[in-house]
Length: 41
Image (cartoon, rainbow, N blue to C red):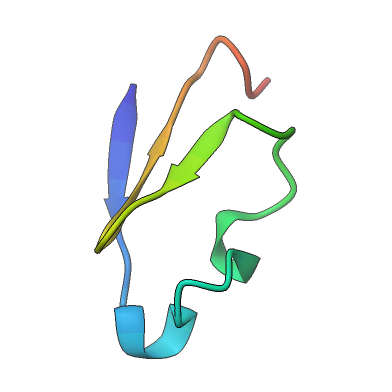
């Protein structure tokens, strides 16, 4: 699992910044995204 810092003022927590990974592969959290490499290939 990893994380990427998100500019919340640009992302607005809408989820558009998480890309095209499958459902449940990414979690948009307060200020960063966590991804699960075993779910997002």
